[in-house]
Length: 322
Image 1: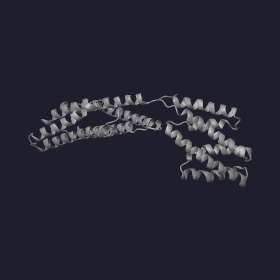
Image 2: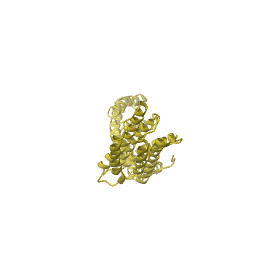
Image 3: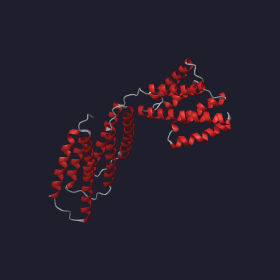
Image 4: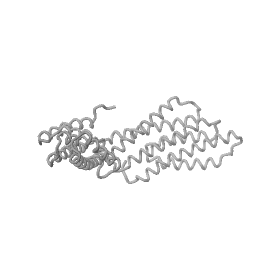
């Protein structure tokens, strides 16, 4: 875990800049501009603009309600409580709660001054503008996470290759892969982290967002679910058959094709050839052999679904660079 990253650094710098500028421009309660900056620094550019809009709109509405409330009922804690009673439900109803706490802080300034005037109200607006503006400017810088995502993609492919190879070996040897659970957990962790990075990249592109990375990670997550299903089949094999070495060898080819787009089409063609070979082989002679062969065929169907998911992704993004 990174305890000091770009968001922490931007928050610290932004807080200083907001308070410093508030002091230069003679804005009262300038420290509040720093607080607005702190809560306005977000993880992505799109999120920053959405929250900035919600906060600004909510604050304008809230300040209007606060001013009316104080002028009618006076500057007392009871009036402040009435203001909260009116304003909070509005924020919840219209999904503007991002601006609730900020507006409450601004309203306390008016309560402490015990008067309302145009300069006082504009002072609160300036605090809002300054805090949000500094945060938006700093949030225009976001580190490029493309390399990190590429590393995740490679790790995911390696882990999937490991599992497919393991499945193929077990068909022949019947051995137990002691690191199987560890690999599955590591794969799940890499997929979760890759999805988070993909969404961050998507939300940091303001003008030309592409869902390709998101679709890629989702495709891999669906493949992961298939691997979990394939895993269960190995507890149901009763005996080997002439089909077993063929499927085991094919599993190795599937493993080699993971992460190598050029090999995928060839593997799918090979799958159809294997199905034709199986059609010509003798029928099972016993119930146990029938059940074992049925499980092998289901395993083969799972591999086909695994491959088809990548094929669909490749067709969807055929004209895009990876």
